Amino acid sequence: MNCAVCGSPLLFDRVVFHCSCGVFVHAYCWDKHVLQAHKPAFEVGTVDLNSEFKVKESKVEEEASDKQVTPSIE
Ligand SMILES: [Zn+2]
Ligand SMILES: [Zn+2]
View 1 (cartoon, rainbow, N blue to C red):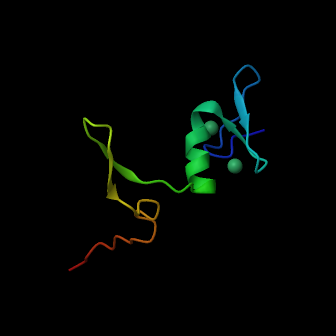
View 2 (view 1 turned 90 degrees about the vertical axis):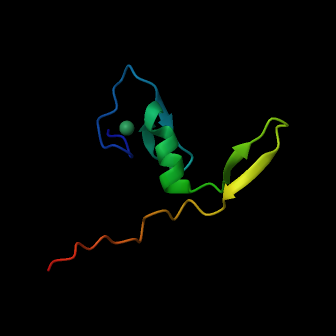
């Protein structure tokens, strides 16, 4: 059985996460799987000294997925 994130075999003596969506991933691949497969809503920002959260950007999830880098050939 292989990890759904990195594709490497799951080892019997290592911790394996069984997600509610049915896949098995390494413990260290867990956050990647959640981000890639389930895309939880979140905001990126900073916390100041008064513990106030300030949003920096609201859209992060669609980062560079549809940006295509086409090298210009001249
Ligand atoms: Zn993995
Ligand atoms: Zn999942």
